[in-house]
Image (cartoon, rainbow, N blue to C red; front, top):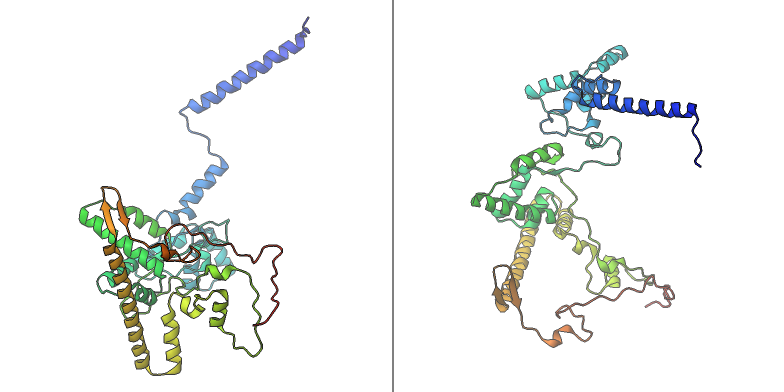
Length: 371
């Protein structure tokens, strides 16, 4: 037989069940009630911050970022207060700290009167206060993108020259030109652009402005002459040389690969090194630098024309079959073009590289002779 329940246990179970039902009914009544909720301490603190120091974040600053780290607890812009506010005593500083939102009002008055906002510092470009290692990187302003497109499309300047003048990487210059070309094409076709969205995003980020005129010095956006890592330089090797040998960068490049160029020729802008060398040799002779620059531009134009001719000849030699979705190209090839080992660059088909043996076990890595 099942165990019997005592009368006291049964009364306690009934009381607990009735209490749970009453709590559930009260909770449902509170959810469905139209009466105002009781304001909690955290809720009051939230609205106090939104109406006080947080009011500075409703409208972004014109021409500047609007991140939390740029303001103090009272809602004052730190860099503007540090430059414009006079020296005060400690009592006056404490009184100023207690006032909420006064700094933004004074800043708005300065903006309305035409005073510029100070430039952002490193601490002002932290959008996440808990992640102090992240800094928001600047993007190209809309004026700078238009200037890149104008110089390439209207003035006929090369991507390399525009990159050197505006201090923007060549890959970014090419991407901006292609996107601007598509944008102008869409405008001609009457397509709708997401201009409000782009404007809102640009207002949140730091921007690199365009130069004021042709002769003005551009603000560097990024490093434009970083040495790219070549796949031939990733292997580990030991190359002994004699003490009397003059070992330089060209010698080091030949050790890695016979066809590898030295570092000064593999950088994106080798002409800048050449112009700096000419300026060092002929100090005060701007005509020599200008003459060498013109020579380098002519050499670059000749190389570009040669590449265009090769591309045009290849396109003319290929047989094209077009359909609404694809374009098939057929070219005549020779079996001998693959080379003796089948890995020549002029061949066709998939050619997989041989993995290096520099980190394989059992291989002798220490040189055994000196050539």
